[in-house]
Image (cartoon, rainbow, N blue to C red):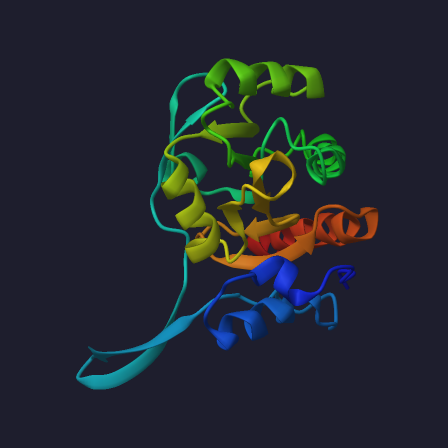
Length: 225
């Protein structure tokens, strides 16, 4: 099970709904490894007619479309991640606190799944004024990242903040009093091929990322079966 080394408000700070916090907490629950990972976030009951009968299904929260720019200068949208399991996170290149730890840990994920075309990584900068395309490319190069399996993206600041808090259920916001002028979650978010969140992990610890990698393998096995 993922190790919870931070309080829940570290991951879901400023989320108005207690339901969301409760659902995020599921990602730290224990259970048999052969069970499917839970789907996190809000869900809505939708009733429709099927063969003349009323059927109610659950529609789960999913990552909406977005439009950012990668370290290669091209446009990245939700369609770029179609048919991919991916890990999302939020950072900035000049971050003096948790970002270096996060990138060391995410590099472990990158190295483990480099031969798995179904797996991608998506890192969003929360400091687009500084983190230009060229800055992100240099940052990726210094990490030893090549190809398009790990994309570093920039874009409109408010859209980045909005998708972090409204869609990925984590914190990203300006804070002049914080080191570097911004605060963000240290979480890694696991997203499946249907754009559903399947787990949230402490990206600053080896134990949290060990569990993330195990759960990526579980998702890969789920799709194979």
